[in-house]
Image (cartoon, rainbow, N blue to C red):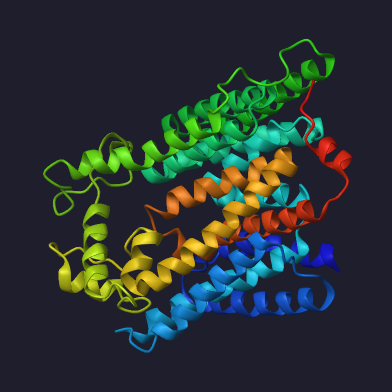
Length: 434
């Protein structure tokens, strides 16, 4: 039963991606019903992990969901408030189910395949799979090939936040797996992806597809050659010569990637969001101009008015209409943390922090017990957390469910690590390539 339930859960984000990401009521309601059925089946046949990190994560997300439901009573608009509650409930059901049914490396492969339509997070996962020396050579080559359209698609979104989030995830990936094998695979993925971007941007549709296909074959071939020379021991193996505290350095780099652009833009006269906007073109990548700073300012002002309980779920659109300095419409604050503060106050933010703390502790336990398994999911979650802090990922289930399922996998594996009493098995899992 568990493999069947796992397959159904892993198919969810990809299925929702074909229905506007599950943003609107119809697909979201169907997804919620399906998630409820899968949760009931999993609860009847599987055991829910109950480690301390797991319980913190459950309590945080369940508390956030319950507080969202309670806030409907004072929210200015009922429909957006219900939509917010339904999304949170969907994520809670998915997290609990994933924690019960997902195990090992297979979910990472399945989500990477489905994430060909969820570009940034898929690229992090495929880079990890290509650089994992214990995977089959054919799978590593396929992952390198899959990264080509993923990176090209990421570039063609012209989303500065998505590109930065992907880069942050790759920084975390190298910090978690500081080996020559991983670095070599990452170089293959990035270089092949750059070739794919060049062809996709410089040619028309038909020639662009042919170019991408050719570069995918090239990437697969280079990765297969790399795997072969690694097996023969004729190339560099082992750990990279990084400083002892390279993890903290990576964390500082990611934080700087998040904070510095916002600080620079905030120090200027303000974003020219009311003027002519850059459309879907590469010109967007050369400027820090964005209406996000106006959204964040309004969210903080809304938080200041109701700091304890917030204005109610789904209330940002109303707060924006009241406080905005421009006529541009907006439904979301483009930041999970700031929107939570504005809509659900300090209590809602506390539940969100509790959820994040549980996941961080679970990730820590898995990194200590099985770093090779942890690397991909943790790096992908870092990319999600980065982007959700500057955009409205939480409102798009097809995106967020990828992160929720990876979180459930880490919770399950952390519970397994906590219950493992055989030190020999842990040492075996910690092995690094020769």
